[in-house]
Length: 109
Image (tube, rainbow, N blue to C red; front, side, top):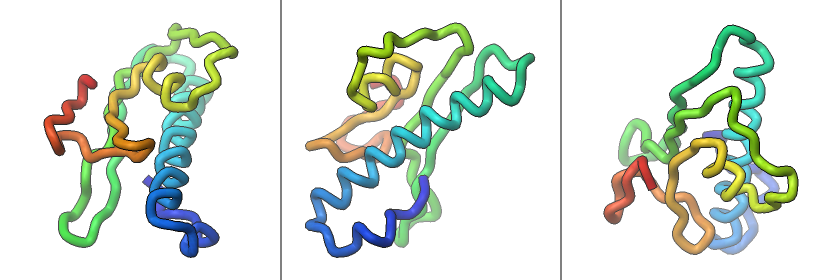
């Protein structure tokens, strides 16, 4: 995951975390698109998204098995739902991305 946007530093913590989550979900969708656009021979990819943290080296935040042939209707407006339909696995708590494995969260959720 990218670090938070610098202009979000003065936002309330909850709103800042929601922005970070939305950014991570949009990034995951973009990475999927770039992989399949850039590598025509790739039909399936296993992806993991980590966040750097101060107390541990990296925290696993999202996993995904994405395939080229997965189609999601354009009318699915929710970024989180689009990501899930494309094969990403993650958990949200109050609109905030949770670490995989925390609080009973599993990569298959």
